[in-house]
Image (cartoon, rainbow, N blue to C red; front, top):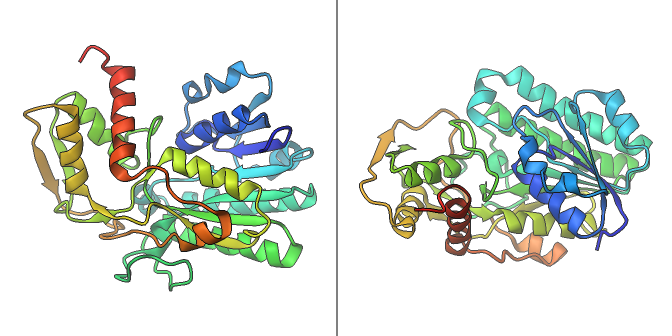
Length: 320
């Protein structure tokens, strides 16, 4: 348990950061949220703001002096803030670099100077690229095919190097396709959220590619679970760990499941050309997560999507 721990969550108003913040507060931690609100939304923190142990600061991870000040009394950092879009990283590689690499270095340096106990870093399975080897294993050769993926690989390397050079307890978690409540639907991130919104509005769904590409969809509650495990782990120091279910499913299969479960009719699936930087097949070997952290996903893809669809229906379409 993290009761009484003083924790900084970067990207706290975002999809993962806000869910993590709620979980930490539930455990009795004192949480400082930090977000520039580019992608994050304050409505995600409505519950947290009712808790006296939560405080929010608007700011940017590129602001080193601000981070240095914020971390003065911090025990643990969850670094979730990022430039998160693969397609946008192709359009704006310099900005992606500045946020994801320079911002991460700022986190590491401020943590080192302030004697922070632990950093848990949100990385991405995008670092594997389109290498056909499956399942993806942490020690395999990386092949990042987008600026976003390159920045995540570089940030992971910095996490490892700061563990080795400064004995800073860092753990990088490679997320595989996270989904769940508070995921923001946009053409650049959160495709699942777009699919669900279209289904409930009886709009057609557009897929990039033929729909046979596979993913390891990981429910948000399992992402939170492994973050909490990593925060208290000494054995994971300096490690990079996959986070997923270890079970792939095709995009087309999950869309058809969502349409059927939602009991919506007349929805057509349309196909557009695959986008630059998109990966065809990806799922992870989670042996390391089991061995080091005792982690196993509680949600298979169908249980997770049922819960997500039920949440969405109740919140936005309670009369349908």
